[in-house]
Every structure is written in C-alpha cells, then in structure tokens.
Image (cartoon, rainbow over all chains, first blue to last red; front, side):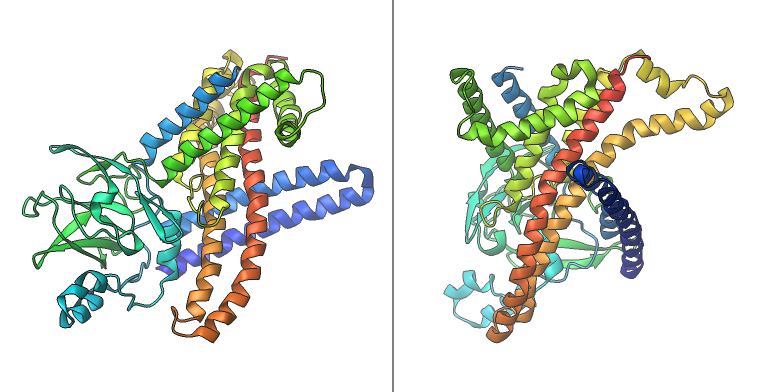
Length: 67
Length: 429
C-alpha cells in the first residue's frame, strides 16, 4: 500500500503549503505597512516557517517509514 | 560556565548518544529496497570464469541502479567511514547475550565494495557497511570466507523486509542486523546482538566535540588576553552568533536567570549547528549525524531533563492541577493532555531536527542519483552528461537551502528549549 502513504505525504504537504503561504502573506503585508521593521519581520517569518515545516516533515517521514 | 565544564557537557552528550545510537537505526526494513547489487547473478557469471576472478565477481554491478536503496544507505549509520573511494574501518564493540563481547576493528571483515565484507569474524559479517550476525551454531565461529547477498521478503504482516544472507560452503545462513529499540516501527526489534560500536556518527560527533572544544578554548583565551580590545580573528566569527543567541534567545525567554542556562543553550546550538554543517560537506562529511534518530533523541532527552529538573512548583502545578479550571475538565482533559505534552514537546524537537536534516540529504542524494539513472549506471555516457547538467544546478540549489536549514533548525531547537525552560522557571506574577 505504498501509494496510500504517498497520498498521506501529499496531504501533509498541502497543510505545510497553506501554513507557510499564510505566514509569507502576512509577513509581506507587515513589511509593506512598516518597511523599517524588515529585519525583525524576516527573522520571525523564518522561525515560524521552520516550525510549521517541522510538523509537515514529521508527517512526511512517518508516511515514508510506515507505508 | 568554565571552558572545561563546557567540554564535559559536549563529552557527555556524545557518549550518551553513542550508547543510544547503537540501538536505533534510521534505515527502514520495509518499503521497496530493490536489489541494489544483484550479487547472485554476478556469482553465477563468475562461476564460469577462472577461479582467481572469484573475489572480484562478487562486486560486479550487474543490477540496475536503485535510488531508494542508495539514498537510505547513505543516510544510515555505518561501521566503516567512507571517504570517497576509501573505506576506513572503525572499531566495533559487539555484544551477544550468551556469547559475550567482541571487540575488533571492522577491517577484520576484509571490506570490499559498498562496505560488503568478504570474511566473517566470530559469526559477525559486514553487509553494506553495517554489522550483521549469523545466529546459528552451524556457522563457524572462526574467520571464514563468506558471500553476502540480500533478498526482499514479505513477512507475516505483508511488509517487505530486506533479509541478508551469508553463504559459506554452499550453505545459506540468515544474518541478522543489530538490535533496535524502535519496537518494530522502523522494521527493527531485538535481535541476537547489540551493537555498541564506534560508528560513523559517533566518530563525527567526537570530531565535532574536539573541533568545537578547540575553537571555543581559543576564543576564550583570546577574550582573556585581549581584554578591552576589539575582537580579532575567530572571535569576530563567533561573537555575533553568540551574542545573537544570548540577546534574542536566552535573555528574553529566561528572564533574570539567563546566565545559569546559557551554557546549555550555547552547547545545544553550536553542537547541532556543527553536526548539521558537517553532514553537508561532500565526501568527507556525508555522515548524517543530526539526521539520526538516536542523536536527536539524546538531545531531546537532555532538554527534557533540564526542563523538568528546573521546574518550580508553579510549573508542576500548572501541569498536574491547573488552577482556575473546573475540576471535571481538569481530571478528564487538561491533566492527561498536559502530561502528554510533557513528553510530546521533546519528541517534536527530536523529530523536527531529524526530519529536516534527513529530508534534505535524501533530496540531494536523489538529485545525484539522476546522473546514474540517466547514464544507465555508466552505460550511456551522453545520458549521463544530460543527467549531470540537470543534477548539478538542482543540487547546488538544494545545498544552499540545506545551509539555511542547518542554521534555522539549530536555532529553532535552541529557541524552543529556551522557551520550555523559561516556562519551567517562570515566577508567579
């Protein structure tokens, strides 16, 4: 049933895509509102993206090993 | 914390992981690991040839290139250290209950291609860089010539497993891999021996321990000798990073007790960063140390210990009996969830680092594998050229991302640890 595991991994990536896309969108808006805070916004954006990505990657790796 | 205390922290981290890594492999036994080297065919072919060809025939690549097998093989831990075409044997410490300890260098296995040993030693054999054992007293205990191969078989649950066979005098024996503590999740389990060897990952960690120790001792000495002067040399490299962790991670999260926990956070950050970066170096690195579940688990266990030992009464009260919520909710929902969260938070730390680093390495290995797929394992040179033209830019791009991921994941591990410690030592307000 390898294909079911691949479908699960794909669903996890959808979640990661939506989450990180949202982070990026709000970060862009925040930079547009206050351009001098670019440094702070950028580092926080990368940190949040890493956390969201971590959750998705856990799901992907589990589907790799279990399926 | 003094420099030698820091070294002790690094040393204990490494030794603890050494004991753990022996028991938890990354490479799965399930999935489709196609025949990487179709040694059976090679053996049949060389049986017709002259006898002095016998040794070389085993390493014949008559099988197709298997990207999955190669990728998993390269992100797993091994008992030999491969640098380019050379394989350096590493010390093996093997324990079989009932037989006792076997301490040897893996050069006793007469290592050939792909880390496949041609000789057995005390019923241990080396297949694809990993030590296996024949748990059968019919197999001779002294050093004999063996011919190793593997098959993919389906077990009772329908999962396909890779089984390694050691053939001696025409008789095939099953060679078991080392014991693992994963409870069968990654296809492992308790087998006939425990592997406590100095493997590739352990050597990497010890190397990083020495490197970081040397670097920081030099920096500390420079600060002492150049008191009041501008930083010079390696101080200028490390100072911004150090101050960044101190000002953005330690102080905001830990409050006024930041000095007490700063050495632990620094040790975590620089150790993880060093391991991540070392795994990126082609050929000489190539040891997936932070992409190994046992390494990250040891780091997460350290976080778990530090957080819970430094937890004050308010921390434990909030976990076990949160003030201000109805008793029924607390008993049924809140307390179980909080207690699970106690273990899940370090678990996610462990899995996040492991998944990020391993995923990056596997993508790079897949891109490099494109060269072999297009070149049909060396038979199609223009195809290999096309494969290289595709693979090199992709790999460069992926390695740039991996560089970013190395820093970010070390930072995320550290900042989450700081956040957990901060919530444990928080005063009542």
